[in-house]
Length: 181
Image (cartoon, rainbow, N blue to C red; front, side, top):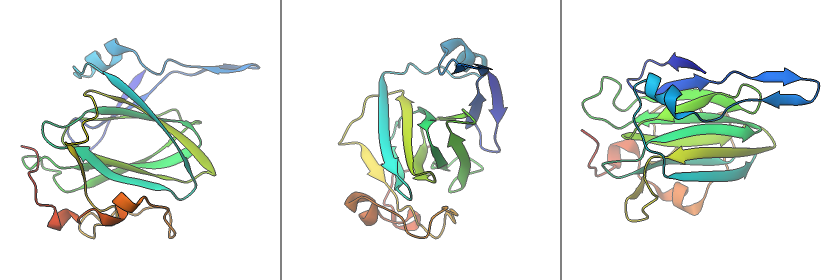
């Protein structure tokens, strides 16, 4: 597994080694020691799986402090995956990072606690699977608007399919906090 750094502290991409032959392919999607080699000490306690149609945007979600680290991959189709740094002490606070995750590139994005997360489906159908470092807590669930002008995220759709909740999230500048340290 190759570890690829980003310009965002602690936000990492993992590129697994893929073995292919006439039958198809094989790869390891998770191996704890690879994360430990990258300095990530997270005990993953929950796996989530979502299926969405083209132009669906699920964003921008996070758990209130202390937050929820995630390891995200697209097991079917293609998505434009986005993480927004919500750590006030970070040099990248309020900035968004986007990357294509797909069933062809097999990239995985490690999103530490203190980031909001979302994605836009760019294929007809996409399955997104993510491991979480804490259990989902509906009382801690938060969101900021997917189209917050301050974030300037260039989503790859002009006709997004959104949940009622995602239509009502406050913009980044209107979010009442607290942010992460």
